[in-house]
Length: 422
Image (cartoon, rainbow, N blue to C red; front, top):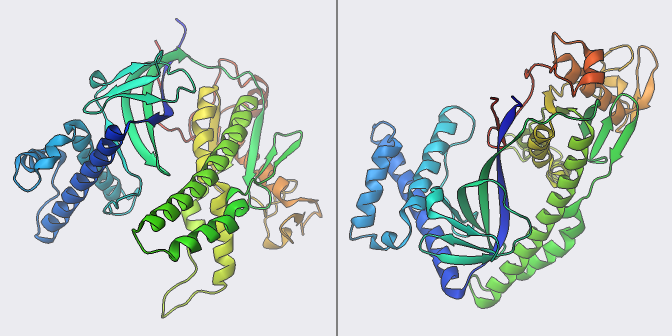
């Protein structure tokens, strides 16, 4: 029988709540934030007292006591499932910390990433014809229906961003196992002067950086100065803060639009996509240092950090991850060490090979080429070498056939695609 895969996908829409619904949205988000912070404080106090980690089931009993207690009876006004899911989020944050995948959980602040989730699909109703969705204790909410929602509804997440509320509807559906139509493998070198340099073995493609933050930097700085002159939490200060948040939202929207278009084009035209396994958080770390050991070239490093973060390399990698899978291809992440210092012709590695930001000249064989193109070529070759035990030449011509390379070296997000055959 023909293979199928189970695809999980989220559809995000802006909702248009009434005044009463908007008050409830803020109230429910605040209740979930309160439960998260109260549970985190309880975990920390228990740890300082020498106790063991409190598991979710035990913490859920505490939630019942909080909802029925005299101190926080207003928790009953919020739906219970989002409150329970806030505890699950904290439990997952601790598990990630124990596994050294993330830092220690931190308290949530009001106005920063306000959101809550309805995990039970039986409580959610979606009426696409009338562009509305039913959520417990909120009723029917209108939303801007920009695309059809496909698949079986699994959960819904409500979030606040720049003064507007959004609902993200996650669905699940079976689709035919995809087979990529392109025989090409591409290496991608990410940078600041060039957003991306692509090499598919025959030609070079250059994607220029959008620089969405740089375009709005002066406008954003002016709005932030105006907000700083206002009395905090006054009416004028709230208006100025809303203006700053709108500018940030515009920057993010422009960046995401650019990244979505670029990742879509790459995933459709290449069956194998090879990228560097970059640690963006380490690359953009502050250079201030400490009082005992102050950093050097702090202003230059701060400008470089802004440029790195403005590119959105992490988001670009995330989008490529699931889009390449949906198209039937593979994403391979290779070590970034010496990709721009290794000669693609003779293999010699030397720091002097890359003389300037854009110039590459091998000190051994004299090969000269653009440094970003050299990096893209090396990334592509390293990606092909990770497919051990396969005929690389045949793979380059028959990547969409029945014989597939192993999954070693690929990075796949389970939330984007869970594959099964039958």
